[in-house]
Length: 118
Length: 107
Image 1 (cartoon, rainbow over the protein chains, first blue to last red):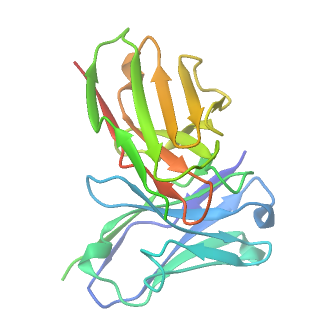
Image 2: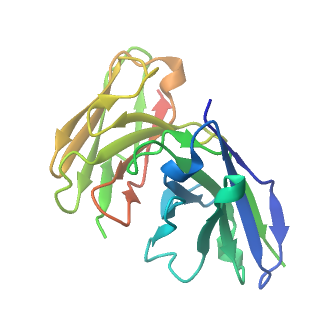
Image 3: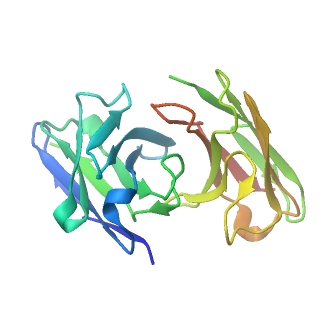
């Protein structure tokens, strides 16, 4: 059974750094793209970017390029989303998602709630 | 970026009704379109890929159609569990983009 398990909720202050994780199991981690999706409170889904662990190919939405870094550690089947300096506007639920197609997301993590507040 | 515009933004319907949601792309995306359902507090669930291919386990009352720039999601004979928010997503080219969502509410 394919599973994506994300790290727990975070409460941070503006300016702090953060790295959240998404651990895949039940499939060959290097074969599937992993995407990240933001959902701000009460709002819709926003595609942030995607990463292919097989060759580290990374694509970002222009809206998020330079604001976040997507990476992965193949040795532990884990993908990451990180910020170097959080803003209050980064407060949101963040989902990782994957699938055997690079195009659609069959599998989703449970979400990581990030709250940024002074 | 390819912009995805859904309509309506919200719709009220009754159990047993048929509902159609549309999604328009700002440029042609062939059949590179998916539909997701999201319930409050839950991750999205993929319903349809490649514009019309029903995912395994998704009830047959859901169907998708369209190609190019105009797409539809149809739900026949609405069930109580179908009241949720629906999103389209284009996968024709990076960056992938979602529509703004359509909230399906009980009348």
